[in-house]
Length: 548
Image (tube, rainbow, N blue to C red; front, top):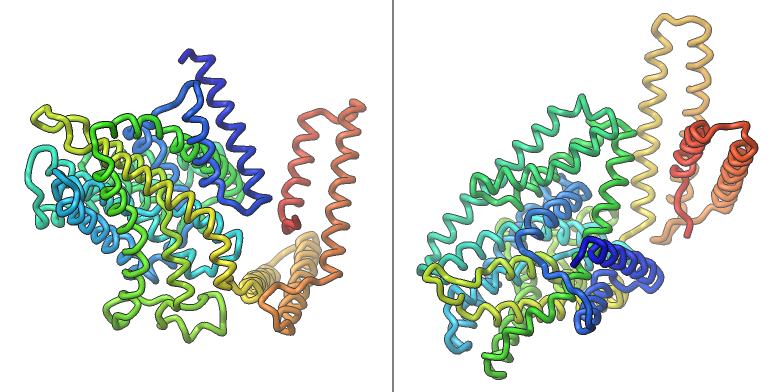
């Protein structure tokens, strides 16, 4: 394609991503599933298609997506539930790969154990984008969200490491379980170290990140630096990116300036939105390349291979969750109830209940990492012969992605609603207001300390004004807490006075903005001055809660 054609194609893809986001927000359907279906529809039409290059996805697409997910995750929550997360992201991935490997070895004509394990490693890691998008929209409890996030961050490293070993065995050697385990642990440990090194280098550069532009440049570079550093020393680049993102995200509230945080967050939201949308749109466009190589296989062989792949992916996950929750707590971390709810504090050591297991089981959607991984399988072995059953593996992986991403993705929201799983919004609001009250009390204490120091009359007036402002804010938060305490509902109670105040404040901001624009249009205020004053109003408006 020419440069102009490529640009038009990219602009058309962005337009589709934007339109699908608009539709998804109003329909409740996951944008990832809709984009995949649109990509499949476009793939069968005449016109240019873009083939997913594995090295491009793994090097340029996956690091920023994983890093953004890690920034949005909680290092404390993941560390608190580390055994549960590891059981899902390591043990379950290994079991899935090995069972598919055994199934291919026994039931698929001519297939070897190594070939089956390679496919199993590619389809084992869930891509939680669709499930998390829907889960947050329907109010899935935070404990379930934490598990989905933690699993999605760490399972890619497990799968890609195992895939590399299995491909090497299928292409030129024998499959050794002991060697695979050793290589996995070495790669994982090295990835963690590389991620920690990059995170601490980022921490050391914080003094120069007060400038939002510098902070953005460093933040956008960090995932690629972590990935390249780890890959250069032949350890897990994926795990390095995740570890760096978790540590940087944990440090950000303490070490970053407010202006830097606001800009960096906005930039990463845009990067995440565009990258995810384009990748899921391109997933559907891979269908022609996947189907082209199936002519040499018998229909029965294809059906058996697909049945093994889809069957293991769909059935092993709920079985694994059910069995692990029956183990003693000393052998397996348990996470039941909603950690944000005071009523469920005593349940933290209880097993996941049936509804939670069902939701977690159905959250195992596969996506970009599966297709990127399976396309890394080489076309030729070390002996320059065609890689065994490569086209069949590509098709099986694509079917698994379609069944989970479209089937489970579209039905996840109705399932969660039917199960009645939802976060206790009132308790979450109460916790946030208690934190706000504590922060204001800390501010009042600091004001009293300042008041004890020698100061002049001007400072005295400033101290008194700030004391009154913080006092009013403390009273407002206390009234909010009293309202939440008096409510028996799980929903956040609505205060008519508060809602009226929000409407008035928005109207006042709109009036101010319109007057400033009139001044600009009349030539009384420069565009530069307008931008400065409008930015002040924008920040003030951003503090108001959304009411859609």
